[in-house]
Length: 422
Image 1 (cartoon, rainbow, N blue to C red):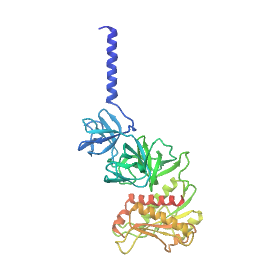
Image 2: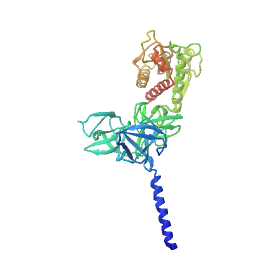
Image 3: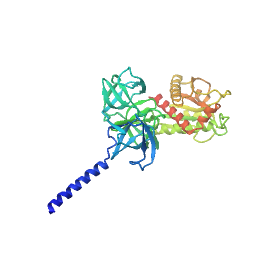
Image 4: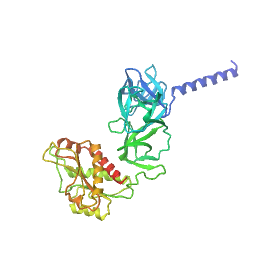
């Protein structure tokens, strides 16, 4: 064989190898803009690209999964409830659909139907958000829902948009770890976790939740209470709290345990303090100056609590409590306000706190009330006292004993305070 011919063969072999390696280890970016529809009855989801990898889940036929990358015939996909995984994309097990673009839903609740028309069955609803679509037909858009099912929405209430938008707001995570979810509630699946300082563009919001741009082809949701909202120019998007002095009062303490649950013997003073500390941390992260009437298990008189608010020229005073009643079946959430000073502002503060607590905790709404509580009636600033739930109610005592429930209560109090100043 001549030397020149040998060189040509060598080059050809190298080119074939390069092509083989390229296709065998092809890795599409996270913005692959494809959705994989499962067309078999069920398909295994594995921890890696191969049958030797651990099976971590199974997805049923008809499920649509956003494709993040690929390796040969294996697709790395985003799961509705369990983060990420790998599925086999060959053998006719899946059908790949190109994501044609994104639509912005323009109303608070838009019906999702099984087909492109109002005569088709309503299968779900979507809130104001930006959603990828697979096709457009007769003024209707076929979208993929957070739970992985496809449906149709009317183009009358959704307009094409781009995720490459100049969002005027960004959200920076201000807690160590934050779940990023497929929808605006804790019942939606976790796509992944975000970390302290991670920042996202905000494209929309519903009470308590932010719709963020996750990658080029998708959006996700994060809890608003664990973020610092910023303007595009880098300024704080929560100017309402910047420079405000807020007194958070953890009711009872020390020798005064407050109410005590009958089943778990849970003392109110501990519930109040733990919740107050959580609220204070979020307020400080958002730029407020926070004064705690107590940050340990100390006894503080009612007059001392009032004096702390006055001495610090506070803007508002919020006292945190848990309730009790002789009738153990009674439960729910209620909020009291100051009628002696700044009563209109106090009512407005109590009202937004009550709204957020009821929305978050989903307990009976007892309402906004008045009473002669010294800590709020003697303060000369807008003030409110929240009763999160009833320690005397066995089910609610169990809830109050859970750190996750107290965090949700703190989230709600924080959101209420933000709303008051906006």
